[in-house]
Image (cartoon, rainbow, N blue to C red; front, side):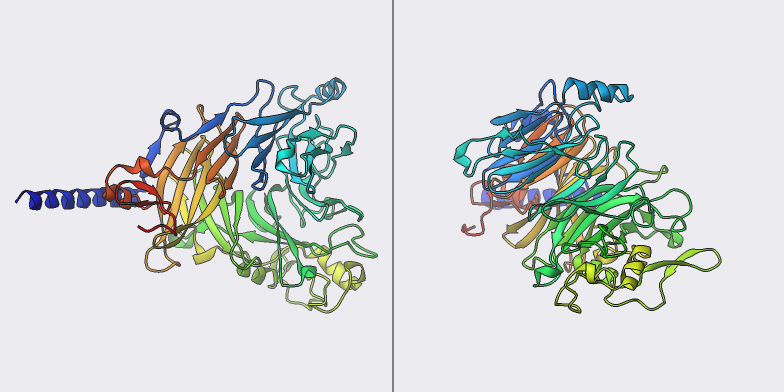
Length: 551
């Protein structure tokens, strides 16, 4: 009878564990909650606590080929080894005493503002990076030599070749900037003046004349904060390629009563070279639409999460259709909350093909434009796919005039399933960053989200389909404290090659593995009920699941 009793005990243990696990999922309590001390003791975090004369480790560039993480900070650029960030090289790039004094005389803070905060760090070619900093309110750019091969072990500032950083890096280190370097051209969303009032989307570098959004026109940009920028192909013809900017800005007059923030997605054509007579050296294909991330409430009043904080693009087999993950917080004074929403590019394109926003009527309110839209449709790239215009300089005057006065779309972009996939409202933190890993588990593919917060924790969350992929349940697997002191997480990169996550803050950098299967317990039931797609029971322990292995 002893063996029957043992089976009964095991079965009862599984039932109790399953019940506890269900309660955790229902209450959205993390399966594992690890303090910084526990992370250190279990060898689950490696930290670089910064240099005494540096801070603001906010600008990340991941290079999987070289196995390096390049980081821009205050007065320094670092090159960390992806295997262990304790192994690093550094370049000091401070400003001159004269520049610092000028900045101080202008009334700026000597420690927090009058330094060179690195805001742009991009791969320029096979041997160099391109870097820009605030230069104590005097933006400056240069090239960094990294050698052709990883074994060259070169990391050197080209101090004989400095360029003006206006339109590439902001003057003020507090301002966000988003940039992308493609084909030797830098696309930047930034502020182009000392006062931080002239915000624009620029294209600089390269052989062409610099180009930007219309100046001092709130219909185009209204005090924006840029989050990220991505190149997404529109068709199989590269002439149709578009660059998408994600940002938040003040709502345009008449869109909302009072001062409200709206999250936006903006598009421009990669082959936009401005107009011929009007909009000379200005974008002619710029359009923007609102991104909605809201929860339907009682009496038809939605709770909106409008403060876009971060965006992650999860590439699919079709490069034209990545899934867009967005992290939002509330701008409400009544309650604090965060949400994650997912968007499809087909929904984004549908909105950009829909009606333009137009001000009309006695109250001059926003309505969908009902009149004749000129040909070719404003926002369309000049290509053989649509209409055969060779350049934006050949576009008819009525197209340019219309584009200038109608940069916004009337319809917003709603998330997949019309609601967030994750919401947090009753906690002491807000979301700040997101990266997503697509994991091959024993029973299919899962997207695992790693979400950074403003108190220095990382949440690991998996979306599990209930009935269908349209009905997802969020399981909070882990909540990890990755810095000794509470600090806002301001940068995150994921290395699928190394299976590591890299996290940046004002204070330093942390590195942690994507999975820690052995921590879930020593029993099969505990391993399986953890519901971590990285892990499976191998017959003797809870360990990393590999699709090729027999389980």
